[in-house]
Image (cartoon, rainbow, N blue to C red; front, top):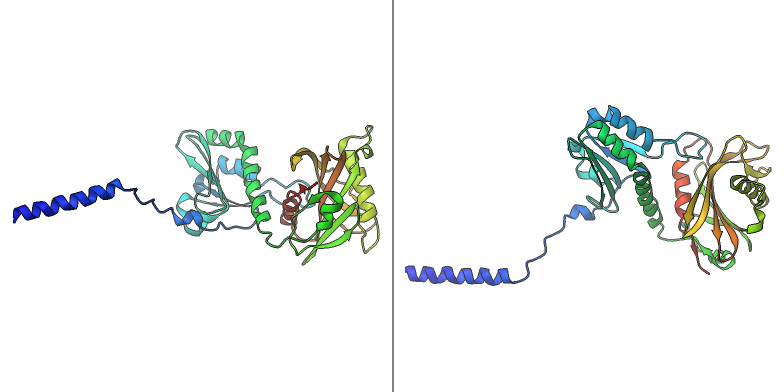
Length: 330
């Protein structure tokens, strides 16, 4: 009897050994990593203890991540922030598209987590032993943090366009393509000027595209002055307002200006406020002047919003996402 038991045991061991020699089955990935991320545009979840949120760390984060967006007529924060302790960051809460986690009583550190709990998702973890260390680590990476969160928000917005508007003439006449939702319509199309519009509940979203010869910019003027002159000339000539008046840059507000890169070309970014001269109409605009060295021209892309009495940050963000889909096709 004992001999039979030993035979059975050796047989089982042999089977196990054969199984171990085979390729082990791959572990199942956490299905949470495949859950769809959630959240409104430009929303940011900050994960940290309440007492630190109410202290200097929270103050630094609010001052920088909820700073006013450039170019809007009313103050609106860069990100809409909600804070919660780590114990609450689970289930639906950790599916936020963007989150920033603060870890205390740890060595100084900074890391980026991609699709940790959902996708698309970006999480950033900042750690330190003291509040001062954490604040310094955040400020050292502030620009990278803001741009990282903004990039995933832009990409998410662009990927939501499933049925783009057919604007083949834009490709043919200006040599570019744009991916705009088919909720937009072509308001004006000529050989050298395009105007796309979308109606919203309290106004319209607008996109214009045109080209300017390089010699239009005068050496006697600064780049921002040239851009304002260009907007007031081309925009004023082509953007027809039903109420009458001329579409111009509002002089009462100094535009925000910076150099940037669009579609691998050097470009100028200008954010400011437009108005219709002698009329009670105004709103924010975002303008890109792209130096197209191949065709020796300036390609101009602009988005502007008319939406009186309501917040405009997310509308301007939608226009920015569309403008940044530009591709040069010939």
